[in-house]
Amino acid sequence: MKDFKGSMLTLITDTSTNLPPDVRRAVTHAQRQETPNTRASLALDTIAVNVDMACADTGAICQDTGMLSYYIHTPRNADQLAMKAQILEAIEQATKNGILRPNSVDSLTGKNSGNNLGPGTPVIHWEQWDRPDEIEVKLILKGGGCENKNIQYSLPAQLEHLGKAGRNLDGVRKCILHAIWQAQGHGCSIGALGVGVGGDRTSGYEFAKQQLFRKLDDTNPIPELAALEQYIMDRGNRLQIGTMGFGGVTTLIGCKIGAINRLPACFFVSVAYDCWAFRRQGVILDASTGAIKRWLYKDDTPPVRMADHDQIALTGKEKRLQTPISEEAARSLAVGDVVLLSGTMYTGRDTLHAYLIDHDSPVDLQGQVIYHCGPVILKSGDGWTMKAAGPTTSSREEPYQADIIKKFGIRAVVGKGGMGARTSAALKQYGAVYLNAIGGAAQFYARCVEKIERVYFPEFGVPEAMWELRIKDFPAIVTMDAHGNSLHADVEKTSADILATLTDGSL
Image (tube, rainbow, N blue to C red; front, side, top):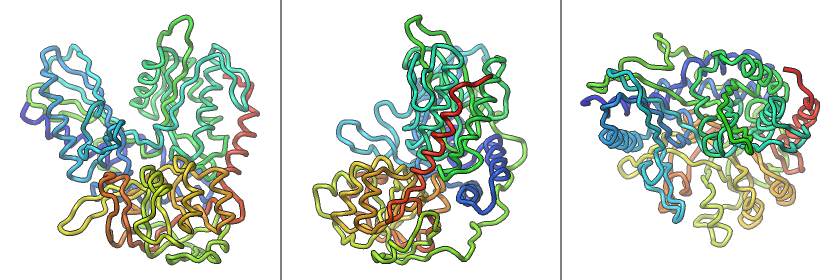
């Protein structure tokens, strides 16, 4: 099939850079529903601008381009070995093009393969069908932040704030509500759920992820599940978790539930959480040439812009901070303040934090900013080009962050989803703040990077290396201040109180 590899590269590129129409409609609806001039509305405004930027410039919507998972239907005589080889070539090319971030890491050594290939990556599911002239290829890119918020329940169970969940549809209801609550803003809400009822532990999770290939505006053919989906959309959005966990009107943009048979001794409810950057696409190919005949999740018309402007609207009340930041400046900030950062910023994720606990930093970090970010960066001559630069989930750094703040005099931490009590105590003791950037807004934040000055620890791989960035007017919201206040803790408590009112539910 002479066109197959090209079709696969086109599919990867479109999936990474262009949200499907049903997702665009759902996010736009959330924008219209949200209360104006709130943290949630600012987040949704940033998301809309970012989606337009990504589509216009063919850039990754989110810097975490996730695990590539394929679901492929082929005719009986298809050469799956040849097709797989060309898929791998297309993935390697997309990584070189900066459409994908190198995300395949050896689980034993921590070494990044650099090309998104290696044992277990990508994930490809093959199935034959009885259409001799067509091949169907579906692809989903699901990042680590939302993947970490997947959850599986074994019924009966005792659920926090909801009580006993039995082996029935009401127990399933409680599990899904709990899954929404436990995700908070860590998985880049506003989110979508794929739910698999039944199966074993492996097939249940796989079936849950398959539900994410349904369109957000479809109707479940099983009446009981259709009613449950509608119930979850209504009650889930009453939890007031909101976009990025900032509080707000909308928390969910979709809930899709399927059921498969199970063993008598097992009753699993598996939930695949996906973020607002809901990147899934599919194509039907000509089986003889591999050329794309039609798209599965596209309208015939070009994508409509989601924002009516090219930048977020500033109010004039933003606090401007120049690095290095003084303790006095950090202590003057309060939860809810919007800041514009300029100067030097250093990226740092899991590998760097673990390293710095036992080693010195290659640069003086006193008064500086650590950005929880695994960017997409390409070598460009003697320098580097920033391709995508959104925040990663900060909670993974909770075991390290307080010690890093104390040891190096860090004055601000930028990430998404918030951090825990130990970090909060360190912010208060040493005079620092946590700034929440908008998860997934990779193109928006890439434009705040004026220059990549240098890289430290390139052997850690592109996402985990320490990049020294020169930034200008990088916007973020103070969600944990130097006085012990945490928006994340407040939203978690408020949503837990609301969740506790949903112990009894009528479908």
